[in-house]
Image (cartoon, rainbow, N blue to C red; front, side, top):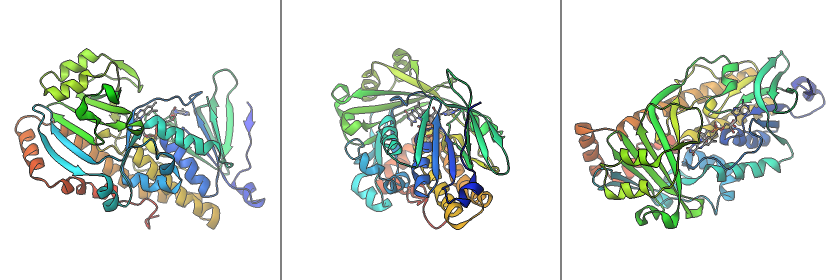
Length: 417
Ligand SMILES: Cc1cc2nc3c(=O)[nH]c(=O)nc-3n(C[C@H](O)[C@H](O)[C@H](O)COP(=O)(O)OP(=O)(O)OC[C@H]3O[C@@H](n4cnc5c(N)ncnc54)[C@H](O)[C@@H]3O)c2cc1C
């Protein structure tokens, strides 16, 4: 078996070489972690099972808790022409098209939370991260390598990777970070038991060119439509050239991918009792991709010896607070702060990883729980829906965002670590 031999931490220290971290998974969390860890003085090898990181996915919302961190690694500037800073969050009643609330975003939210809310295409964010990763002298990105196993010793850890047409590859490092998403192999290798929890909901997503979208959907706003057993979210992406639409419906279908085709007629039938605007929006798309919504219960630890997790591998969550990517970005920032101490101050790795778990698990678990609850609220029917809607109509717009200030104003580079 070919071995990509790296000096281990002790050897590295003796010749003053930076310690080496191996990241499995080049999604948003893994790539962000690579850039943060490089700032902390580590050398990084980041591997993804995909031979090319193709333009997959659709819209992602980036809240101030994430953009404040992305600013630190230059990514917000890179997204300047591509990401959109929405003006408002507008909440609509799906059955009759009534606008029930509008919360200011844009400049006001930027000032309030100290960083912008942005909406972007997942592929645009991933490409911006890859560009930085590819030009960084301390980061090596390797594609077509699927993590299958690990070998551990006291002094190092090795990841074993399958490649399509060749022998297994072994890459040795001081630390292995599993950033391999919802169906994480690293998580299994770390012995973490929480099974996937199917939510009984599926997400259907599509991108509609701006000029083909209904006029009301072209505004630079994030829109949320709520109705019995379903909701819709839409906002512009790609500098406003396209409109990202996600429909969430109650549905027990299960599949592990992100890109199963969805039948537009089936979706349209689920919205047939909704108002014209909502039906026009659903009907404007020619094709849909769908995925089953899955999370896992929080664990009491993510780390062991020379291994840890981040992003969806650690804390997959429902998308109803749009925090999946943002929480992975927080993980990356916290881990890099602690690993800087390992490299520069001789802080023990075990202590750093313990602290990482202590800081990150309660926060991501709180967001996971809040996201699950939010999904129930969006799909209320009958009296519960009436009470929710009355409260929304009475609530000043600012208060709507304020409810989640604990998420948005958080600074993962702050004094907790
Ligand atoms: C293809 C795809 C499309 C998505 N589309 C959307 C979307 O449209 N909207 C949305 O809100 N969220 C989407 N997501 C999810 C969203 O990106 C994540 O929830 C969030 O960004 C957290 O990112 P992550 O890096 O932890 O995980 P992910 O984004 O899932 O990235 C994990 C990475 O690990 C790689 N990987 C998996 N197993 C292995 C292995 N054994 N060895 C090596 N590499 C491995 C995967 O190829 C992937 O690149 C998508 C994710 C993926 C992978």
